[in-house]
Amino acid sequence: MNPRENLLALLRREPYEWVPVDFSLCPSLEEEYRRQTGSRLAYQEYFHFPWAGIEDIRVPKDDSQYLSYHPDLKSGGVIDLWGVAHEPGSEAAKHMTYMRCPLRGVDSLSEIKAYPLPDFAHGDASHQKAQTDAIHQKGLAAVGYMQCTIWETAWYMRGMEDLMMDMMTEDPIADYILDAVTERAMIRAQSFAKAGADILYFGDDIGMQRTPMMSTELYCKWLKPRLTQVVKTARQINPNLIIMYHSCGHATPFIPHLIEAGIDVLNPIQPESMDFAAICREFGGKVSFHGTIGTQTTMPFGTPDEVRAKVWEHLSIAKQCGGLFPAPTHLLEPEVPWENVLAYVEACRDYQPQ
Image (tube, rainbow, N blue to C red; front, top):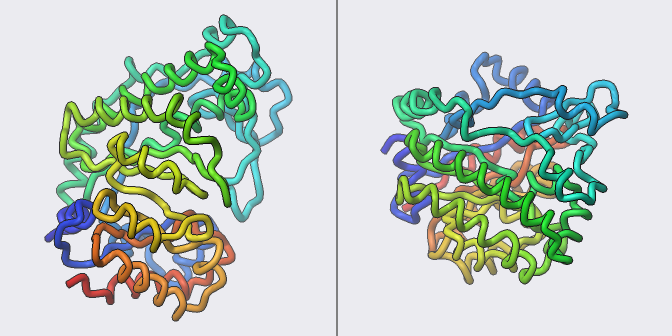
C-alpha cells in the first residue's frame, strides 16, 4: 500500500498496514523542528504525512469593500475573504487573534443582504485537478479543507451572540446568512469533488470545554439540514468521498446527528472534553476517528513515555471497531517538548495494526 491507500483503508475501517502520523506545529515549534533535524523539507514531508491539501477556489479579494465595517481596526489587523477582521495576538501563538464581526449589531435584513460575500460561483478552480493529480502521483491522499463550513463562517460575520439570538427568535436574518454560507459551501464541495479529492474536511466548533455550544434541538433545526445538504451535493459527484468533521470541545450529543448527516470521520475527540473509550463503544463501526491525543494535557505536560502509552492505549481501544488515526487534537503550542513530538511519531510507527 502507498500512503494514500493505507490512509483510506484505515478511515474506511478496512485492513491497513501502518499507523500514519499528522500534527500541526506553531511557529516556535517549527523553528525547533529545523534546529533539531537540520532539514529544509516542510515537516509534513519530513515526517511522511499521508495527505496533502488542494487549494480552494480562487476568488478575488477586495479589502476596500469591508473597510467601512471596521473603522477602528488595530494596526496589523487583516481582513479575510469573508470581510471578518482579525487583529494580531501574541508572537508565540499567531493563530490566536481578536476577531471583529462586521455584521454584529446590524438589525436590518436589507442591510445584511447588501453585505458583499465572496463569489465562489465565478471563482477560478482551474488549478484543482492538476494539484490533485500531483498529490496522487506522490502516493498521498488529496484533501479539500473546508473547516468553518457553515456555523463558524456565519457567526464570524454576524457575531455568535447575535446569530444565536437570530436562530432562537427565528429571525429571517438567520435563514439568510446560513443559507448564503451553505450555498457557497456547496459550490466549494462540488469543486473539490470534481477535482478528484479523496477527503473533504468539514468542521464547525459546536462544543465548549464541558458542554455543547447549543441544544441539539437548535442544531437539528438550523445546522444539521444544511450540513446534510453540503455532504449530499459532494457525494452526488463522488459517492466514495470520505467526509471528515472537526469540532473541538464537548460534541458528544451531536455525534448521532453528524453520522446521519453523512460524516465518516470525527475529529478531534478532545480527551479533556470527551471520553474516547465510551464514544468508541457507542459509535465504533459507524464512524472513524482522527485525533484523541490531548494538546491541553498529554502533549504539553506528559512525559515521552506517557505520550507513547496514550497513543497505544487509544489504538488498543479502537482495535475492535477500527478507524482510529491517532493525532494531537489541535495545534502543538510552544509548551510542547520536542521529545514529545518524537514520542508521538515513534509510537505510531512502532504500532503493529495486525
